[in-house]
Image (tube, rainbow, N blue to C red; front, side, top):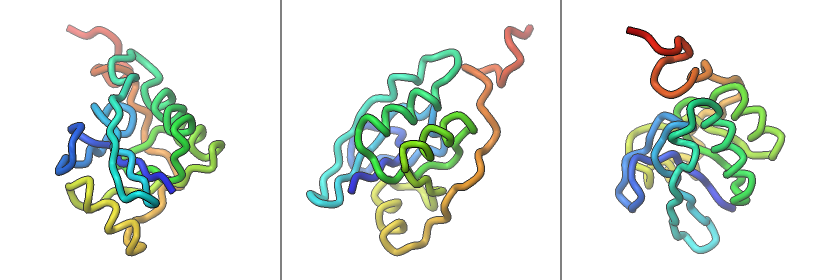
Amino acid sequence: MKICISSTMDKEGAIADKRFGRCPYYAIYDQATKDYHFIENEGLAEAHGAGLKAAQTMVDQGVQVVITGNVGPNALRVLDAGHIKTFAMKGNKVEDQIKYYQAGELKEITTPGAPHGGKGRNGFGHQR
C-alpha cells in the first residue's frame, strides 16, 4: 500500500504540510518496503486547479491513502473516484503520520474544506 503525506520538504524528517494542493512536496510511503520517496508538487505554481492536479498525480502514482490537512471539493472528488481514502493529519512530522495512520488514530476526511481560490488571492483576483 502506498500512502501520501503532504510535505514541506523533500527529505525524511520533513514537517507535514496542511495544504494538499499547495504543499511543495509529497512524501510517498510504501508499506511493503517501508521506504519513502518524495515528489515535487507540479501544480504548486498553477493559478487554479492545484488540488485537482495533485489528486490526479496521486491516482497516477497508485496511492491508496492521502494524509493532509485540507482538501478542496474538486480534489476530494478525484480522490474518491480513484478509491483513495483521505485522512486528516495529526501532529507535525511526516513520519508521525504513518504511525498515527497505522494505529487508527487519524480521522477520515469525507467532506471537503473550502476551495483555495487560486494562487494567493483566495478567489478575489488582483487587489490593491
